[in-house]
Image (cartoon, rainbow, N blue to C red; front, top):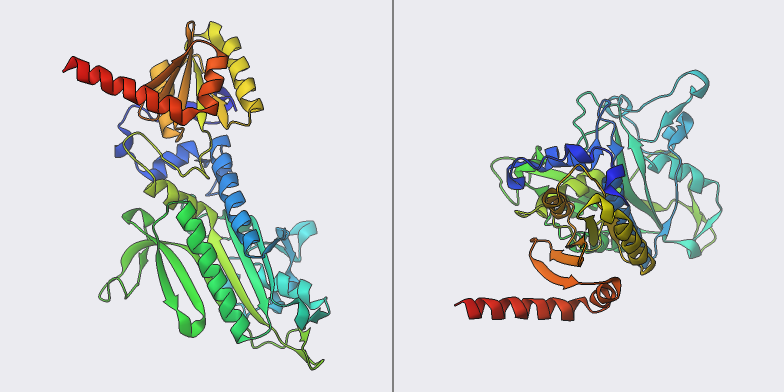
Length: 399
């Protein structure tokens, strides 16, 4: 990736200390762009992080035996009757289409469609539990949209299980709990789990003033609501309607299965991750989410051919690299960008070779040519240790 092609890259605010800027304002420039009414345009930087998030989540789901599906975003209105009873308030938030698409709506909740699809299958008890996951856009007609925390279009990572009975359903609850905790651990995201075992449901919150929602969590404060942001939940999806969804049990009788559904707000989770993974230098994202491990910075425009060649060679090595090839921004400010973008290493291309800096912008190594730089990539810890030892020796001599 070349940063000169990034949308909105010149609007990143480096004038104020990073620590004084709110995560929401920073994400509005760096990750999202809102030129319409709470409908996000994802920047290349934001797209990289979202893709890394979803790939991580889908990989973990696969480890739990969940297969990935791709539901449509346009749904026949008739399938709405296949799920739980839809109240007026919920129905008012559905984006019904008009004209040639009358009779359809934009995806708001997937359970009715999934139940409708599965009803056309002759399910056997041997197939259960069935466990699926997805990552897609959802839509809601919000009266008071608020950027990516409460928008008309938002991404969701979700899943569902079809179980033969309550024991299997309980095991699926435990699976979703383990999946959520594993993902949040990878994302270095602190969270609070609110359990409601009587209803076989749980909700996960990010506790922060930045959440901008007041939530009643009696286990934290029984007297008043706390500031939090709801990130994910699973619950037993029940309906008293006589649905077509059945499976054949061991006695060869058609019986009604039980259904568990799960949803995680991808954009809300992204906000919480970036809000909780900040320091005085910028965002400090976990390895699995980091968009770049290295950023190349040519010191002068005439060094761009060498920087391009270095970029291509690093890519061929499978390294996660970007190049800040902008000519209207100083080297110092481009290094600050690398801090904000969570890159742990930036490489300044000079006429004498390569200067390697860590995220704190401390110089850790100098290399005269790419072969020496290659050695650094293949043995980074040894080079880093020797650079630190040399720096320590210099400080001792100065004393």
